[in-house]
Image (cartoon, rainbow, N blue to C red; front, side):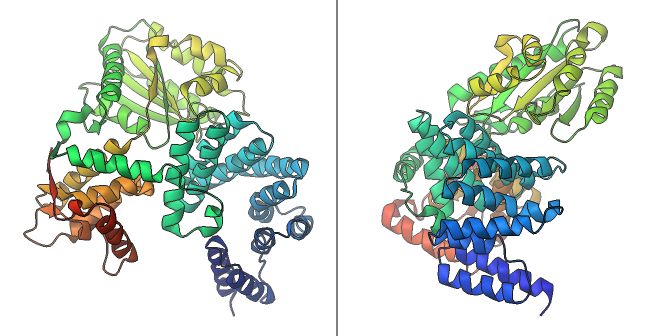
Length: 493
């Protein structure tokens, strides 16, 4: 049998392991091992799941010892090693594995590697009772795994985030994150991760969704606009972001000469990049430049900023992931002269420095302040220009879904006048759809399934033929909220 087939068998073992079928997992891992395939770290994780922590640690240590000079092979083993060593109570070994993982992952720019490194740091910090540090790294891992399109790993990170927030005394926020993670893990059938985890908050979220749906007769997208197509359901959130937008646009329309720097902290998935893009799209006569500090090296960032300063039009610059690469020291020192750039540029340049690190604006600012030149960077941003973007709530999720249904219908040349309440309930109750990219693709597929002549998005349109999720969730609605079936909310732009 080919190496590819052996790898597929090992992956099947991983699937069984996640689903809690340990006998089936062992069978597949042993088949792959007998074919000469490296079944680590699966076998080691299986032993840990069976409660044999010493055996798990011995297996993973032997695998690492056999590959002292093969960083890519070690990269596959180190994430499991961190978890196994911590389960055994060996924090020093876990810290060494986490540090090595971070060192290897730092050579590459892949979101999944950044996520694995952040997750391992979070586990070590959580083990040591450092709840705030753990929450920051769990949140970073969650965001990066969503970016990489890995919902299972993202859900595990979010579960850790919930635990850490609760340990840090933020019980309400922790319960919400835990409930959202549990919902995703349940959908994915990840019984191993759900063992011993209650669904705290899931019922409350469902009840809140039903209450909100009961109040909605129509959704008119323009009523909720902050700027352009960027919408928020809560009037409080909408007003705060509208004020921020006005300050940013005012800086672009000014005569230059003053610092026009803004700092945005946003929880993952709340659309900070889209917010900046829509400000630029809705403001005539300006240029827009997006720079990501996690992806640019020193020469690339300097060259891009030099190009900005050489321009002669008002320019909005989004410096995304401003808190990335915390172990490097050059970024903020490089940025400072450019943040003073309006003093030497005829047309205004406005900088939005955005990030999602930490679990709040306070933690985000603390992480910046702790870095070389971080205090200098913050001193160049007026306090009134520091904005915390709230995460998406239930209303936002339904609102974004409605906007995507209308947008997909326009692109497909189909009219959409309404959406079934049962469909909106599914959108709000399904946590992976809080990711904007996933939600956009999901809405587009639903619209394409609408038959000719139909102008309403129905629950059945959300699923492909034979999708088991359709039947399972339909039974839930029949039991919890039969009034949502066959009732519609009107949609309009």
